[in-house]
Every structure is written in structure tokens, then in C-alpha cells.
Length: 293
Ligand code: GUN
Image 1 (spheres, helix red, strand yellow):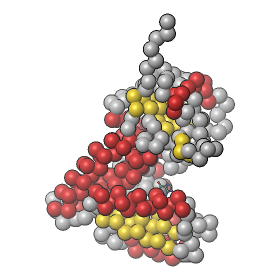
Image 2: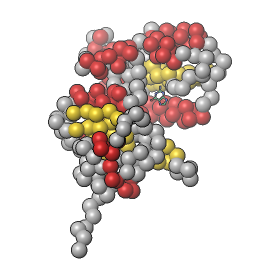
Image 3: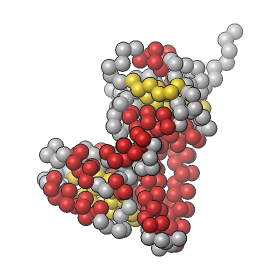
């Protein structure tokens, strides 16, 4: 006789997002009552189709939670100097508390230069070197939205990270590296794996928590997961049949893991939610500085 199979608990990013956005709406209304409306500026250069969708969703999310937003759309022919000048204006605009320049930028614009031109006080994407440095040394600052959302998901299941072994697969500046720093800050023992890792399975089999952020289908399969582990899937890919999939073989891994995030409906909705949280917190700081008690 075989023991009945148990399936992982699903961490539902839509439900958690809805809860967090309700809090954002309440805090936004409280701030408005004190005379300040949180404002986000979203800057899009060029006509990348995926970026169009992301940007539209960000603007809609602001409206749904009562935040003010401006969408600056520019032709791909915009020069770097023009973009830097616009960011300088936004840096000094008191109605704007968060500035987000949608990436990728056209090849003739230096994305690093643009990101570094954003005031760290308005860097709600958390991509500025000052934000990365603050996270590194445990100082207050904006956390990049996707890994921040993953931390909220771990918090939502009561996952105490102290002494746990967390394995992050992927070392991007936007997800993998900041994710590792956040897990470390919560006292996990952290391993970062990447394309040069010799035996990924040997690493992931030791993990209590796995965060997969590679951008490739089926990087993590059931045989690579310790029974009961928490699996967070940051991937958003298309398989050869054109179906949306994460980095994790969901059907297989959910039979082994204790908790798992689905794709879609997992980390995805959390990213925009944390952008709202960062923008709101920036506005709350501005209100405190202006003495709007
Ligand atoms: N392009 C893809 N994801 C993101 C994001 O989270 N922020 C920005 N600015 N650009 C992106």
C-alpha cells in the first residue's frame, strides 16, 4: 500500500496582494485626509510591447488604490540628455513621491546612468546604487519590488527564516542578489546558485526555502526538492507551446514541496503591490518631513 500523496499548500499571490492593497488604500486615504496624495511617475521610452502592458498595469494599480500617477511616454528617438532632464524635473516635483523608468531602455540610452539620476528618496523600484547599498548594510531604503514581494509571501505563511537554508537560483541585480540580502537579513543561511553552479541539485536538495529566478522553464524539478520545502517561483516564461510557465515544474514540485507559488497568480501580482507600498511609504515620509501630522 502506498501512503496517500499530499500536495503543497499554495501561496496565492492574488489573495495576498488584495489584502495588502486594501491596506495601501486605507493608508492612502489617511494621507489624503492630511492633505497629501501619493504620486508615482512612470516613464516609458520607446514602444516595447511587454513594457506597454507592464506600464498600463502599474498606472491602473495606482488608480485602483487611490494613488496619483503620471505616465510619461516618449518616442524611441528621445535622447539620453532629454530623459535625464525630465528625471531632474520629477526629482524636484513635490507631487511625485516615486519615479519608475521602465526597462529596457533603447540601446542609445545608458540605463545605469538614468537609474543613478533618480533621487534615492524617490527610487521606488529600488534599483539605485544607494538603495542596493542600503539593503546590503541593513539601512532603511527602498527594496526592489519583486524580491520584497517574495519576502511578504514567506511572511504570510509564518516562515521563520532564522537558521533556515535558503537557496536562490539566479543572480540578477533586480531579483537574485537583493533576494539573497533580504533572506540574509532575516538570518537565513543563504546560497546563491547561477549558470556556473556545478551541481544545482546537490544545493537545492539541502534547501528549506528555494527561490527560482532564472527565466527558464523547468529549472527546478521534483527530484531537486527536499520534502516540505518552501518553493517560490519568480519565473514568467512561455514554454514551446506558448503557455505561460514559471521556472519551476509546478505539477511535479507541488507533490514534494510544503508550500509553492503558482504561475500565474503567485509572485507576479506581488511585484506591483510592493511598488504601491514603496510609493506610499515615500509619500508618508514626505508628509512627516512637511509636518503633516
Ligand atoms: N522591466 C521589467 N520589470 C521591471 C521593473 O520591475 N521595473 C522597471 N523599471 N522596469 C522593468
